[in-house]
Image 1 (tube, rainbow, N blue to C red):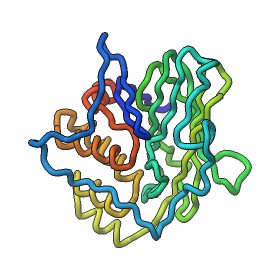
Image 2: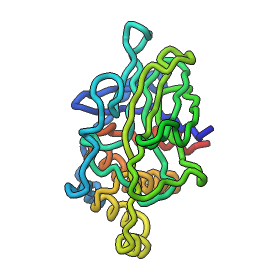
Image 3: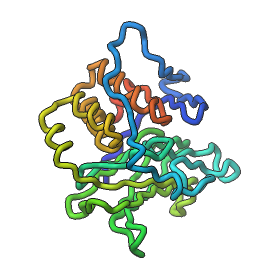
Length: 254
């Protein structure tokens, strides 16, 4: 079972602002940085030469990186959003065992199923069930024995049970490809902290950039610059702008 970390969040995606109910109050998060905050160092620059997965993603309620339950079958329309760039560019990692993140908006406890597969193989490579008690962020860390092979584009899928039952009715999917670049790795090894995240973002390597920022936020929960960088990176790729304070409290408080 993966570690589930949940938070009451406000998210903005596809130009729609969504608010969450926390402690009896409705919270809305603004992604605009305040004037006294330091300039953002992590800038997302996908490499057009590395391509995107847009042509391989199916649209609609099922099969894209964002999906929601049919409102007629649920008291509240549950929403599932994978934390990947909206353009599907930069879906790369240098890690053999990357971490995958997604946001779920629900009104009752449910389960999600994570599946990693090679589109050229019939059987999944790795599956894991995640219990979701409330709206928030979940993650799955790929175990060592399921290391990604360089040059293979893998598909990862999250299936959500809309009404808390065993039937998985909503599907969101994206892709990941491991790349090997000795020169880049040497440059990364000579850096630390935000500089590493900034380098991965500048090279258009999504999974490494987001994982470093979330790890740094875990280790430095009171650092406003790290919170701002995490918020900014998600905003740059058109994915949820997370109210990081609530995210950290629930994600990393236990």
